[in-house]
Every structure is written in C-alpha cells, then in structure tokens.
Amino acid sequence: MSPPGPLVGIYPGSFDPVTRGHEDIARRTIRLADRVIVAVAHTATQKKSGLFTVDERIELLREVFADDDGIEVAAFSGLLVDFARSQGAHFVIRGLRAVSDFEYELQMAQMNQELWPEIETLFLAPEVDYSFISSSLVREVAKLGGEVKRFVSPVVRERLQAKFAG
Image (cartoon, rainbow, N blue to C red):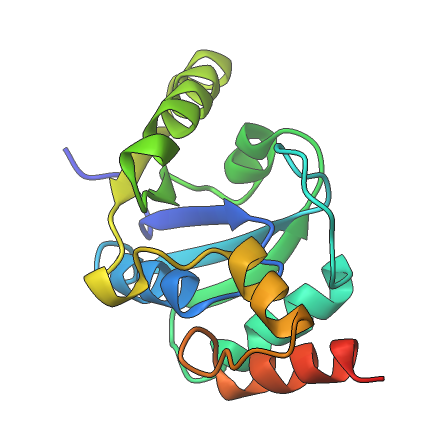
C-alpha cells in the first residue's frame, strides 16, 4: 500500500560542514522520495564542536542544493520524530560510512520507532569515493591548511577557507 500524498524523506544531521558524502546521500534519496528535507539539527545528538552556525549551515545547504528539485533545507530543534511528523515525512534517511556508524544509528532508529511507530529509517551507504569523509575530518584538514576541494562543494570550500583565514 502506498502512502497518501507525496512521499517525504527527512535527512537529519549537523552538516557542519556539508560534504560530498552528504550531497551523495541526499541526491540518491530523491530517487526514492518526492521530497527530501535536509534537516539541520539545532542540538547535536553526539558531542561535537561546531564551526558554522545553524543559519550558516542552512545557507550553505541551500546553495549546494539550489539546482536539485525536490531537495529542501530546514532547521529543527527537539525530537526528530516530532519534526518529521510535522513535515508529513514517511522515513528518515541515514548514511552509513562504516560498520562503526551502524551501532549508533541502529539505536537512534529503534528509539525513533518507539517514539513514533509510523516512521521508518532507511540506511544508505555512500559511494565508495565518499565513504571515509566526515565533517569533522574536513574541518580538521581545512583548519590545518589542507586542500579539501575533493571533499566539499566549491562554496563550502570558500567558506571553510574564510573561517580559517588569518
């Protein structure tokens, strides 16, 4: 049985910064859904130190996905399932780079299922070229003056360079 109305997926994360791996997952998800909402969390679920503000991340994401029909960007706070419900979402999409990601992501998926049984979680593996990329690694390489153009879009690279200039 198909869901009523457009099929909506939520791709949540911190996206600090958005990487080519994130782009890959979002663009592949749009093949599965009518709408994909890239949802920037105001509160990280894992202990992370932020580089870009939520507003800066939203701006970057909107620029990165400007030409991608069906991909929207929004911020949320509170429970992901509450945001997903408010958006009429049918599933949450999560990228898995390695087996080490799975344990944490499985726990989150199961908790979300307990909180809202109607939501499903789908896991996608990124393309091999992006399987080792993480936002924290990109931030560290950029901070130390390394070249990140292979890992992020040009607009993200420019903003990283501006953040670490001087």
